[in-house]
Length: 239
Length: 239
Image (cartoon, rainbow over all chains, first blue to last red; front, side, top):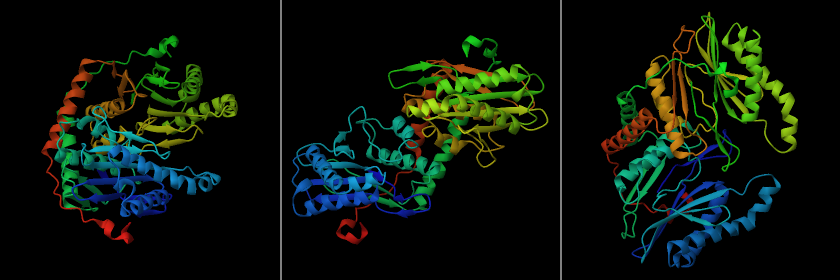
């Protein structure tokens, strides 16, 4: 699970905020929730989820990741009841998307995307990763690299970081710090966490090595062959 | 200049169409126009531009690339006068974006993006490439690789192809054939053209080599170091 920390209310109002939230019952269950969309809405959802978790209810009692995803979806619907009408009256969308990953003892780890309507979508063997928010810039590297059951955790961490690196290079609405959690099956704890600030030495090294590797790889590709343009324009039917 | 050939009117209505149009006066001027947005609108614009070009007017008389871009913008405004009201009555946007590249004798080659409103935007030394349409997936590789005045034409062709390859991998609305034209300064002809069909042997080779290079490069990157998660959630103020 990886998230950036930039939030904006217009281009002249950028702020840093954590978008990663964790919930642990040692040896029993671990959840990580990532947020995108309206920060006001996702904060409200997380507050509801945490209050019920701390009271031993909601995701603290879920018997499966699917049930946990449904509990999170219920929290979104509660916030929808509170805020949607007021937002829509001023032409704002009710926009909050969450990513839930983790494990409940008794089943394998799973991950879900939860929509603003509260309904969940699971990752699958053929679609082994889920993305939130400004996802397009960072998607090709994941499409090329991530393979269910064969990509290692350490490699997955690199792909996640490269996906964010590509997005941050091209889009100002995504920015550091980058938080990454690797969860190892059946560990029920979060022992592999990293928060990478802007200018982090490892981040800089990976960024510059990656750019060099990419350029070298492009140079190593065969050169395309070209020929004269056939001037299709002489044939109007082909327009 | 590079373009794909997929056009769609909804996911169940995909077609193949050329989006690259060329205009040549040997030894005097060369123009290449790429289209995105509504195919009906871009066809109308190209028809107007070609009719005036064939009559020795419009871009056939422009004294600079800027003037040519303005002529193309005028054609967009003519089509706007014809179609905008009818489209907007049925809640369609007047959506047509064009990319104009080429050279008029007496100045250097230039490229412009021309908006649906008809106004032009030039590429610059700091922003040496322009994109149209579904641009986000294919942008990071261009951001990383293309450098004004130092990227060779042959390398630029590879980057353009890789940009389309990334986009086609992730998005079904972009598809082959891919057309690429390399224009060499002061040549005033189109001697380096290629149309790559789906399954083209060179395209397949570059695609699979590129995926292998990327995966190897990821493996070669240093492994990030991780530590225990600090459980910020104990500190509500940090939410």
